[in-house]
Each structure stands twice: as structure tokens, then as C-alpha cells.
Length: 130
Image: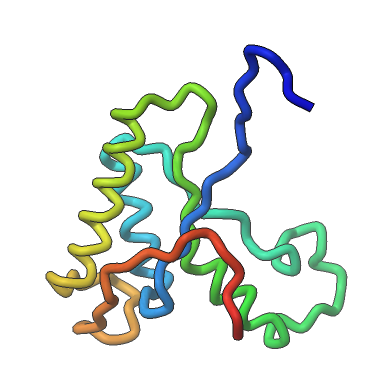
């Protein structure tokens, strides 16, 4: 059904950083975007890690792919009245920060190795084969 004079508003636009990115690198990008006034967020923690599921005996080790993907996701600002200039600023900032992490070897606390590098690429929202 098509409603006249209506605009669709998705509830989230999530990007996933490439496998080479660590949680610490994702969190650094997140903090930098927030510091610059961009309303980015970490996407939801996997369901089995939500407080309401704490009483269930779900083995976290059995959901490695879920946790690996969740640790590299960011929800970008996404709402029905977002302006083109806001989209451009968000995208350019994300690209710049990804390149900074990858190319300048930004030392980020918690990275598995001080010279850890990540390729400057983002993956479109999709399900990853494991």
C-alpha cells in the first residue's frame, strides 16, 4: 500500500566495519564521531548478552560469529528529515576516521597489537558467511 505524502523512516542504518577492526578501534571511531557531534551509536548487543537473557544458559562461546559481528557495528544517524549535508558529513567523517585508523596506525588502547592495522573499507549491511 502506498500512502500519499508520507515518508518512510527506517529505525536504524547500521554499518559493519571489516573483520580487521578490533572492538577498541570501533569504539575509538564511535567516540570521535560523538566528539564531533555526530549521533552515532554502537548497535544493540547480541540478544544472548542482553540483561533479560542472563538467566538462560546460552553458551557465549557458541555464538562467536554473532559477537564478532556485533563488535564491529555502528548505527549511523538515520531519520526521515536528515538533510543531505548531514548525510555527507556523517559519511565523510566515518571514511576519514576509518582511514586514520588504517593508514596512520592510530594507537588505540585495547588493540591486540600496537601496530594493528585495519584496511580502510566498510561493509554494507549484510549477513556475513562464516
